[in-house]
Length: 89
Image 1 (cartoon, rainbow, N blue to C red):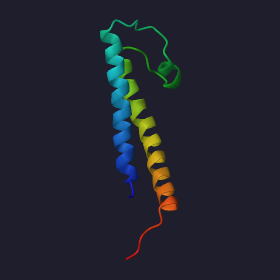
Image 2 (image 1 turned 90 degrees about the vertical axis):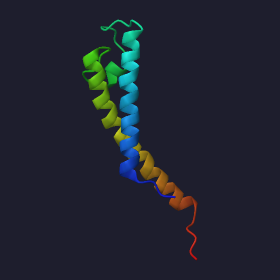
Image 3 (image 1 turned 120 degrees about the vertical axis):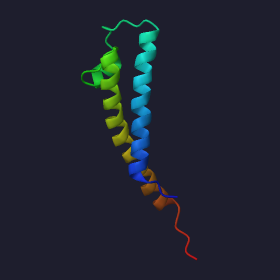
């Protein structure tokens, strides 16, 4: 089975960006300090635990998740081709 790299990258990017977005809002609802420095704020420029930061994290998450998803799908296709020989009828 071969993965569609573009579709996998898009799905992984939306999943990762949505996760960051929801995590940020969960932290806000639970009463996190908006000025608190997090690991994500060290990795993603402009991100903060705030309403605006959730959208910045969403954008960064879609970009990073898309790149990582494309790499994962490409590696899967490469290794599946190498490890499972194709059957010809």
